[in-house]
Picture (spheres, rainbow, N blue to C red):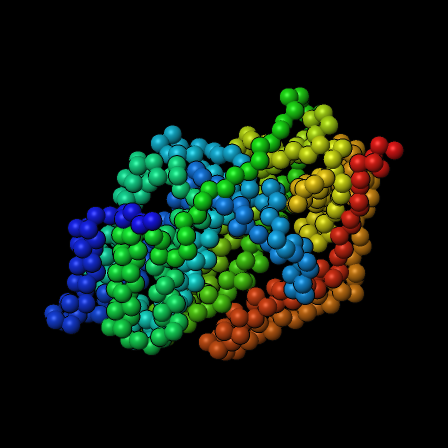
Length: 476
C-alpha cells in the first residue's frame, strides 16, 4: 500500500529549493559556511525544548508496552525487573490532568517525565555539535554575530507561532503522544549526530553539507508521510480503577520533607550523570574561544546543573509528593490530590506479597518507610512511599507488622562507602584546584562511575524486607 504524502509536490519542491540555496550561496556567492552551519545547528536545537513544552499537553498516553525495565539485580543496578512494565506508581502511568490557565489545554503530569527529557537531549546534542563545529569554527564568536543572533531569535519566534497556531489552535495536542513528539523533534538531529560521529573533522563547508543533506532527507520522508527515525507512536491504554463509593476510613500522607529530600538527592545523582555532557560542551566552547572562559564555565557548571536539579526535583515531587493513600472499605487506594484522580486500587484480600524497601536514603535519615504491595496476578508492585513507620499504617492497610522492622544497616559497608565518597570528593576538589583545565575531564567522566559504584555499595549495606502474604494465610 502506498503511503499518502503529508505535503503537496509544490510544497516539497519549495522546501528542497530553500535548503539547497545555502549551498549555492557558499559555492557561488561567497557566503560564510561557518555562519550557516551554526544557524542550522541552532535550528535543530531550538526544536528540542519546544518538544518538551508540547509534550506536557499531549492528550494521548504513551505506549506503555515500550516502557520496560530490566529484571534481576546486577552488579551496578538493582531493584529492576526484566520484561515487566513499570508500575502505576511511576509518573509515566499517572492518570488525570490539571489546567493551569483557561486559554491553555490541560497539562498531564504523566508527561512530565517525557518533557524533562528535553534538557538531557539538548545537552547531548549541543556537546556533539560543539565538538564537531569547534574544530574549525569559533562558535562563541559566530553566535555573537548580529545575523546569527537575529536568526536564532527568529527561529524561536517562528516556533512559538507554529506551536500556537498548529498545536494549540489546530488541536494537534488531542492526538499527540509525548514519545512521538520527541521523535519528530529530534529525528533530524540524531541523523546529523550519527553522520558527525562517523565523519568528524569535516570542516564548516562539510558540516553545512551534512545539515543540508539531512534536511533534504527529512523533507523527502515527510513528503512520503514517514518519520525520519523510528515509527509513529501508538497511544497506550491503562486499565480502569475501581473506586468504592465510600468515605475513606483512613488517610496516610507521605512526609513532605522526606519527599523533598529524596527528590533533591535524585536530582544530584542526575547532575553527576550529566557531568560528561557539561564537560564536553565546556571543552568545545573554551577551545574555540579562549576569552569566554568564565561565562562558559558558569553556563556549563552553574546554569546547566541548576536546570537539572529543578527539573528532576519537580518530576520526583509529582511522582510521590501529591499522592495520599486511603483505606476505603476493603480497598487500599492511591489518590492524587493535584489532579483529584485515583491512581490505583488494590483489594486488601488480594495482596499476596509485601516488600519494605530498605535502600531509600531519605527514609533512613527520617525514619520513614516505603512499602511495595503486589496483588495476586499482578506483574508489578504498587508503592506506598515515604510514610511514617507507626502502627497506624500497619493497621489501616492490614500490612504485616514486620514492615515496620527495617533491616539493619551493615555499618562496615556503610563506613567504607562514606569514607570512599569523602576521599573522592576531596580528591576531585584538590585536582580541580591544581589543574582545572585538565582534571575537569577526569572528574566529569568519573562522576557517573562514582554514582554507580557508591550506589552498589549502599545497596550492599541495606536490605529489603520481603514478606509473602497469601490470601489463605490472612483468612486463618
